[in-house]
Image (cartoon, rainbow, N blue to C red; front, side):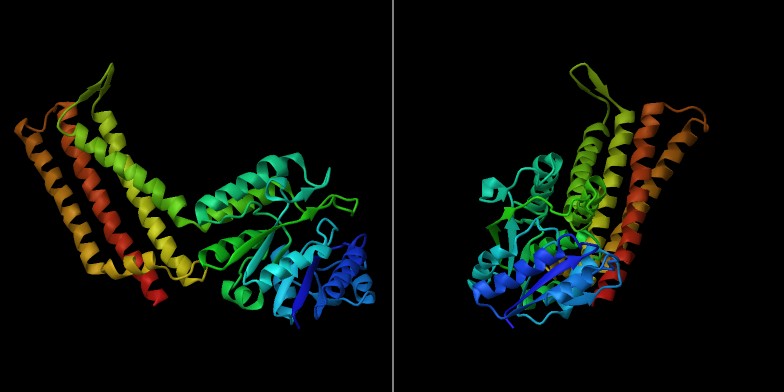
Length: 383
């Protein structure tokens, strides 16, 4: 069997018949051996009966969610490749020839694009203004930045993928995040991804869609950030750490004036906070990367292997202990200075120039020690 058409369904009785007919006709028109599968997610309006009467294979998916429906439908299919789209007549399976041509040309994952700037067509009223001009373009831009995807329409619901490529992705999400997970993993795993322009029609159901703009938009954005430890943790952490170190080096010798602005121990304290927070974020990003590889969200990468090869628990924990001892030594020196005045009042700025770096070294050292153990635990679990 060459191609399986998967249609997720939840109470789509107004349109499921038309979509199944279009899908079956498309297979005949392209001369492809295939099947039409309706992945039903618990419809109570008789959608299943309509689909069966028109020759579709109906697969009952008990676990709720867009991702669950698609995953169940694809798992039950037999085609060497699969193509899927929604059951609301907004996507036309008559366009599947474009997808099939790309698959035959060597693409492993083909995504439609609805936007006119990429050759697509959007019927009047087919896409809400907020989705067309803000939501989808912003999500797509973030996807290109975070994962190197070159797709112009991250949220297009009409896609085709080879069986081998889908099995390689090991999809895990059950909800709307399934759409983002597929593109993210396809990009990270280095699949050959192509994009084809499609015609996007107005929803023909005559009722509100299952999609909720802000709720589902946030779910997509949240999932994308979770899947990118570098941008969520490491890069912000590096910026904070570098700024914190620069400020500490600049202000430890004494106050600094920049124009009419005077920087002293209060700024020194803020710089210490930035250094500690930056290190914490970098540590979280490192742990998150190891964990993402372990659970299959990220493929094994050269960067992760380099980190694992240079990481030695004893070495990093030892370095953390040395920093901690250095901080304790500096704090002890502060106590000696205090003793010289009979434990009386000290110059506030001078004393803070001892206490702030001492406390920072102690906290940074202990963070490194315990983070080293956590990284070792995650790394060993991966091995």
